[in-house]
Length: 388
Image 1 (cartoon, rainbow, N blue to C red):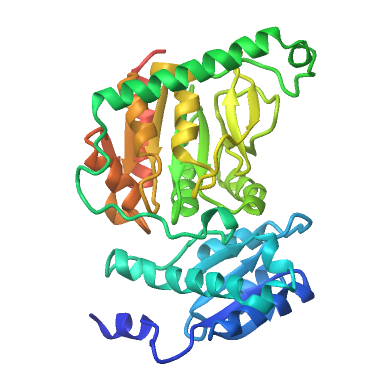
Image 2: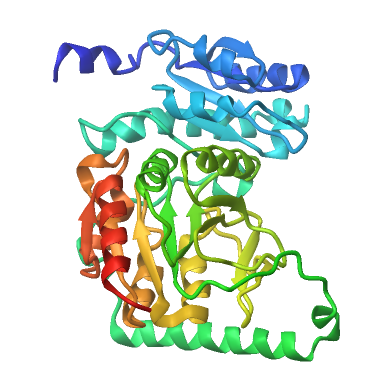
């Protein structure tokens, strides 16, 4: 290990140094109590803004806790500064931490400090060379447990019978919903928010830790209009979706938006899947946001998004797996592959965390690997040489 790497390692004998960013004075004080109960040190407490991010010194701060709420409006360069920060980040959007009662039994304090510790140690556990940047996590009740780590090369190799079963279930669910839409007069009378020509080719992008920067590079490298629509399933805090859409829209020649009910999915646009609802497409190509059927440790579930899109578009659905921890998206990509779609993945060296694309590669279904820029070139070449 080099001297630089050694200095980057957090000394276990010293308390973890945490910086808190929140627009609420009360919440900053609340989080400080919870962190100090857990034996950690709060080195800074500031408001959410780009200047606060720039003022942080990575040599004096081990981890950044960003508290997001539904009312906050932030400048556009705030997200840029977050993505460029070398400090691991934990996004908090759990209402429980806003209750003073959380300080009394310290249970939330223990959960909070456990998560803060894990994101500092997690990149080092993955690989000695990985950078501890762009850690986009939440401390919501739904995902308080650690994400699973792939241990064997065949753990996610799903047998043909299993694939047939999940495809059958997804197809039945899709048919039931289409039948319901056909017979439900309230849906038929619902005003359409957008109009145009529906997309014929849809690529689902799956990403987690390190994903925002990778996807940003990928979209920025697409230099021409393509007959494709993207649905981005990024593990993320619910209050971060609109910020991500604005940031990606600035660098992309495509329109980047958060998913909305009634929007017609069209070519040359990127729709970001919601975290608290399930994104589906009706038979005409309009987005329908449905209640989540089951809780997941991932928000949103990449597997679910891929399954729902694949059941509507079949062979015209493909996927790209970008940087991320865990294995979400492997089974969804397998379903896409069995229905004739393409599955690509970001290469290991260009990922912040490569677990998700590595897991997909181990399933034997990835047809192309590359950096975000190479994936963009390959996609352009593919559509220039194929007529749909």
